[in-house]
Amino acid sequence: MSSSIFTRVLGFDVRLVRRRRVGPAFRARLLSKSKSLRRVELPPLYAFIRLFRAMTVCKDTGYVIAKLDWMHAEGIWPNGLRYLWTDAFGLVLFVSLYGETGERKYLDRAESLIADVVRVLGRARGIRIGEAPDRDGQYFHYLAMWLYGLAVLGRHLPDYRRLGVDLVRQIHEAFVQPRRGVIWKMKEDLSGPYPGYGFGGLDAFDGYVSYRLLDETALADEIADMRLLIEQQSPNLQITQDLGLGMMLWMAHFFPREDWAVTQKLRCLHMLGQMWIDEGYFCREPWARKLRFAFTNYGVSVGLQAVNAMPQRVRSVNAYFETYRSRDEYDRNAITHVMACSSHFPGYLVRDFLWKSSAGPRGF
Image 1: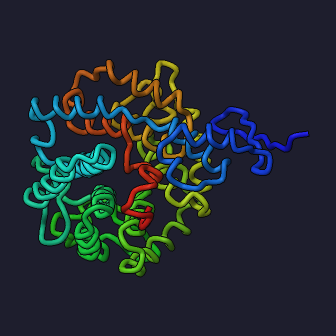
Image 2: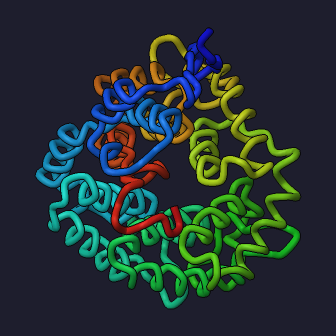
Image 3: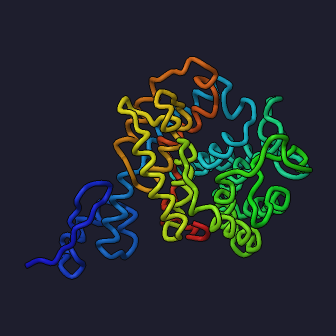
């Protein structure tokens, strides 16, 4: 009798043959499915998991390149108003296109984007939220996402890791109150909290992930501050907002065996299951079932792809918001379209993207 095990992968029963029962013919067929797998010696079960994962992450680079051309022609991005959240995702997108295509122009665009952000939004300490008059102050979670983008670019151009470490040292003490929390929004000069703002719910997690991926040695003390806050906050943290759920799934997938990541992944997937609307989107909150935003749904999509969950719903979100119009400023806002690109091609937002890269495993 053949030896096998059964498991559940993305809701399907999958029969996995144990290694001792896999013959050379089967192994050859499996490895032939992917050029990347042909270059390395992998146990057959591991190779199967890698192959299955690759099939569940979107990689529509044609969509992304066409969208980038359209945004540029319309003056939306990256030649529109600077906004740090959008620019952070766009930075990762450019580096991902370089990683996928090998075309140096995408690294050049990433460097040009950084220069523009620093020129327009950079301050003596930190980076302003956005260029528009009402985008004053500094958000920690925006800064953390920008730090992640610098870590990604640093895989190819190491100087940008050092730029990220320097930015952490500019902002950490201003935002972080040890054993209490991370201030959500600060005044633009980081002299104190922005009036009316307190601690952020996910900010310690944001910082922990970005700091670790930048430089675990240089930022050991700052990482320790964030780790302690996570241990305090995670047991009682219940997220109910769509984008927060997506971003928590995304953060958890980098360190999937840590207690906080296990707990939050399960909670987030359960909550998102309650928030799915059969028309093809996730509602904003469980009690706001008619309220939807394209850019937040795209953020959920990225999180789901990072943890290999709900692939059919990811496809439905991309299809639904391709034709949905909110009839407000978000229809042409850069955040909508850059996040759409990230949903159609997460690239380096997913930990295993180009895991075979000569840049090596450092930080990812």
